[in-house]
Amino acid sequence: MPVLSLKALAERLGGSPEGDPEKLIEGIAPIEKAGEGETSFIANSKYLKYVQASRAGAIIIDKKTLLEGKNLIRVADPYFAFFQCLQLFYPQTPLYEPGIHPSASLDPSVKLGKSVAIRQSVVIEKNTRIGDGVIIAPQVFIGADCEIGEGTLIHARVCIRERTMIGKRVIIQSGAVIGGDGFGYVQKEGVWCKIPQVGNVVIEDDVEIGANTTIDRAVLGSTIIGRGTKLDNLVMVAHNVTIGEHSAVAAQAGFSGSTKVGHHALVGGQAGFAGHLQIGNHAVIIAQSGVTKDLPDDSIVSGFFARPHRDELRIAAYLKELPELIPRIRKEIKTLNRTNPISHPSL
Image (cartoon, rainbow, N blue to C red; front, side, top):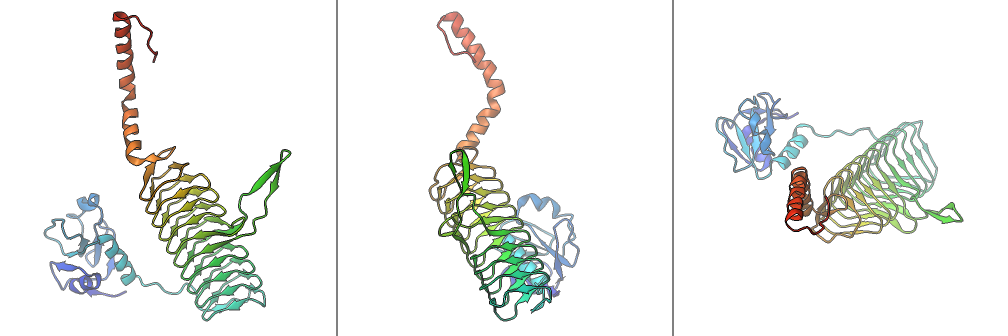
């Protein structure tokens, strides 16, 4: 782990130092727990209450917040600077050294790139291609005719079914199932008949897939996760769904079949999508929303049924007032009935 002066660290982060430029920093920690040799960061104003009592040797902060009596590194984006510090003080080491464990089972037709690491009890079936520098942790299954791009990391107990195409530098967390059968059936005389799912899944470059996430293969064509997109744990992606580039999906969200999500979309936890929808670019879906209609670009929606977030907040505010409002309305109706005896709706 490197040891840097306040001045040197500020230079690495593209920021400007305030305080003792020779103060030595050798790590990073939360603001309320950081020691004298560690830096911390403030990216949310609610943590400012910890600053005065903090023992941190330096605090990374934005360029506007007023702070005195502390060593500071002022940057344009404190959260991104925190990310840079993590890379600096905790450089990633290879999870496994290159090589094939004796217990791994690879079909003779499998093609391997350079410096591949394949660990215990991995199974790779026929005609699959593994790119340079791929790491495959124990107990992973990869079906026939798959392609795994260079630099991809596949954690333990992942299942990748036949014909799946995975790009470069993809990270797949433990327990994910990619390319399983889509949920497709047709009913004939009261009996459900299974529709063959003969498509595949395409995962583009720099995607991350969370633990126990499931991505079903298409009926025909491909289920697609776009370049740079991040899926949290326990996300469900059904057959023929497309999620555009650089989107982010939080845990337990679910996408029904053939829904298309644009690029740079943000989807909150436990949001649900009906099938065959078109969700625009830069859409924001608040947690637990139920989306049943197409959404244009730049939409911000919440609630069930999902509606513009501002409307949902107004409705919530009105609902909060109902316990006091209903008795007042009833009283007004009684007064009207006494002065003008015409029937009014009862409440």
